[in-house]
Image 1 (cartoon, rainbow, N blue to C red):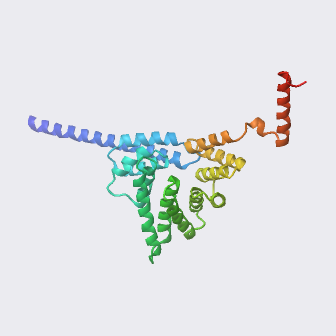
Image 2 (tube, rainbow, N blue to C red):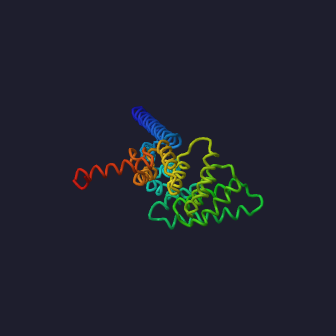
Image 3 (cartoon, rainbow, N blue to C red):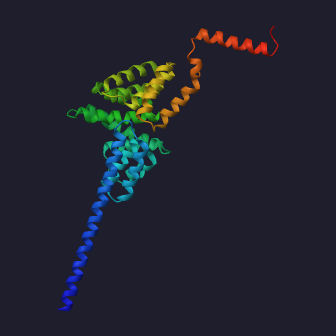
Length: 293
């Protein structure tokens, strides 16, 4: 009798312990998913809080390091946040990458010391998508998205620019009202040095986009600056900075403009007024040094 009671007690303890483990696992999964949802919200809403999103992704991955689906989603979000080094091992841990994930993985590689690998992935995606375009029965959005994503990734990295332009142009011709596709064409033209045409397509992309987009504004700001349209460049880059305050490239371009433009106090003067005032300052200085009477 005593032996039977002891056996029942052991079984009960085992059940309780297993139950506690399940509860802990559910709690961990819940918290990890909440971190993922928060990171997604911080990346997709405007203004973007990239730094906070990366911290939330770090916590989610740390809580569930063996969960394949969570790591797949985290890799994509790390890429959006431009945390290339964090995304790469998560992509490489997957057995099979979708076309979208292969493009994102290539983007990460192109922004590290493995640029050649990333470029080859994009070129392979473009070749396959071009074949699909020629094949009857292929759905237009499928190959158009592939061409745009891979082409833009190459153009943004400033490699294989002619091939990138060919790809994004084919995507835009298939879906001409897609603002993102038009933006890709404008950015590829900028990489080719065709600034006037680049500005035309980027302005068109802005009109085709329902709400202001930091990437389009950044691209416009860069092209306007290269065209010498400094006021428009500053406005576009300020808009991009407000929508994506953690984006280093925007801050760097604004600093570059700051080195080109005169100080605000001088910029407020009309050119002729500035010349008069500058001459007056020189004359006054000369008088103070006894060179003029």
